Image 1 (cartoon, rainbow, N blue to C red):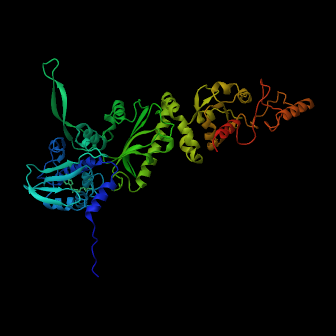
Image 2: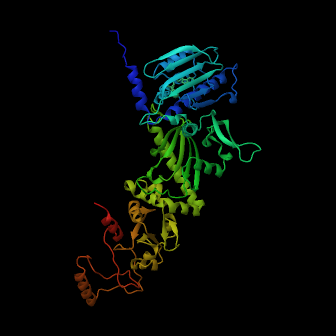
Image 3: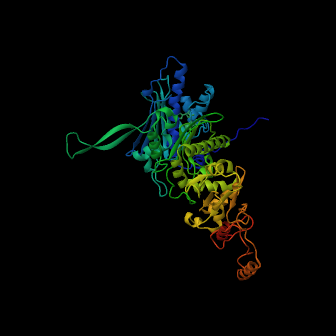
Length: 558
Ligand code: ADP
Ligand code: MG
């Protein structure tokens, strides 16, 4: 039986598509600029194999011209242009991508720059325009054609004139409505911002005429408006530049320009990965805790670029929670994007990149700890708590990644020490890593429970934050040494033979029973202790939960 073709109400399809694919109207400019860049790239690739063509960099650019009086926005390019057939096939057929076909025909492998693939981006123009006119002259042709459409109603193609090869796209910008502002797409500064945001790293110059006031030459107080053509985009992204040519300052400027923060980053990382997954990344460890860092409002994530075009502002999947303080961007050619190019199709590549990035951050922090101790401590003051939360979270699953990054205040060093430092100087007879919990260092120092440990010459870690003890409970051990709270029942310390062990004399027994009676609902048992030196009495616990943990647990809402 002969198969029938599906029919589609193209008018409705177009409307549905335009309004459901994209989350933001401003994306239309990203799409049209991407197409213009592709068109120039095509000449560039043709020139590689065609001797009759030369590619002079300065001849190729994209120009954006708003016209407030006529409510039009023109996007012009000096790219390969479109023939009459191209206009019919590529702009008349939804979901047909001439760029994808070009890549296939020319067998362009990975590493190419052509962006188009889905054949829908162009129609995003109808989000902001009620009429679109495309005038194009193809490379190698003297003729120009004009494609015109008011959107859903269909389109026309007619002969026209154009002096040079390339394409002009004229958008008739919609009038404002109660809910939507469209005037903004005629404002030069707004357009500049959109270009900067999404298309800053397009390889060809994106030019705009920018008017500014300038002091009249020779005059004291007279000003005049001058209009100059400016290139809006930076073109070569910092992450594609050679690391050797970049200074700390360049990275700091990038951090500031990108508004990752207003502080001075403690460290930057420039990653160019060339393995199982190819990507470039610039990552920063900020110098200060953002004001909302430890709140629900804080959103982690890195900027995600596909081939220099911004896809996502904050891609949270690229960072584990315990490194959520890291700022920066990732650019990859390997991403499979979904049709709106705002999300990813598969997360396999993303997972690979995320894992890779996690390891880079970890080793960067470890080398900071090793080589620039002061800076590390500064970092730890700002974000150490997050690392401890990380060690505790997911039942200690991240222990291997985090345990060497943790630091605690030490009774011996009177400053922050790592677990490795602690363990490496443990005397042979010491079995445990001892810690004491309290509100502050001063208070812990006065704890009677701590005395036996410190008298013995053992180092004691001071836990002053609630999370500390929970975190190490998840670690359980460090280098085979278990953690032990000074308030736990058995400290595992042999009393010195020379000293008289506390004896439960009959007299004492009576006293203990009397005390037990008085405190019956508060303590389980009163007994003689071997650990006291200068204090008459102390509290201790049996089992896993220490007094401090109990306090925290009791304070938590059920
Ligand atoms: P995509 O870019 O994903 O292919 P679009 O809907 O954005 O889809 O564009 C459809 C096709 O129209 C492109 O593949 C390209 O062949 C053609 N096209 C669009 N804009 C231009 C342009 N400025 N110059 C040349 N060809 C263009
Ligand atoms: Mg496109």
